[in-house]
Image 1 (cartoon, rainbow, N blue to C red):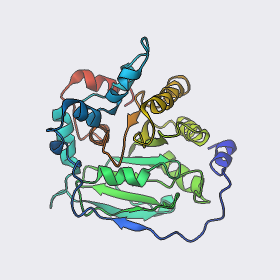
Image 2: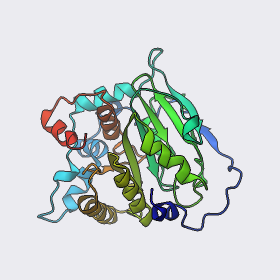
Image 3: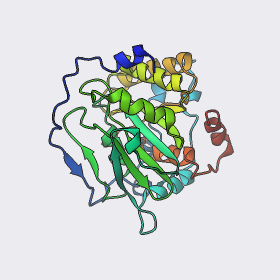
Length: 301
């Protein structure tokens, strides 16, 4: 990574690393009422579509002539979504659990199965999103905190023998002082990393450090996708404005970024089912039933 990128990730007046603030470990002994797509099929059609495909709630606010294509490239069938969800349900032969943590690459576990990682600004909601993705596995322990920047290590979660998910430290405010030395070697050398998920806070839009993170992914030649979090925190008009700004950045300034941003709310479960399906697909565990949908994904594989 260039010196400019290295310095940029240390912006925002970060104070010296302090002892970690008290946190609590989330273990969902009872799955969330909206955790499974099977639980929402009875909802009114408009509400169901909003949960499955959050962009549908914004589409009516788009001006005529604004293309909707790049917001709907990945549009799997309900059958595909249900098949993907099965990967996130644990069983005696398919255990889903926290595996280990690492502060350096030489501490990282040697796992051959496909891997995806989640990267984003501190307080963007990474751990909350992972908790929502794993909500069908009540005993998965995801460390979350009310204090921004709590994640200080690379946290590995194994989804049976299907794939591994890695929760990365956040950049920006209260980022670990060795953030770059921890993250860059992982991103540049992890041979089984198949997709990086870059989280952007939908309530504030793409920020300067998000642009730096995108430049890092571009410089390293990584295939990555943007996930827009906290879509329930702003009005639809403000959210759409932030989304269009992000879409312009993706179109004009990236090559390795998947054209479609994924919209999610970790509290209301908008987009969680779709994101599970995308993860299942890019890790090679789900072949889409709809060939037209698959062609959009193949553009960045």
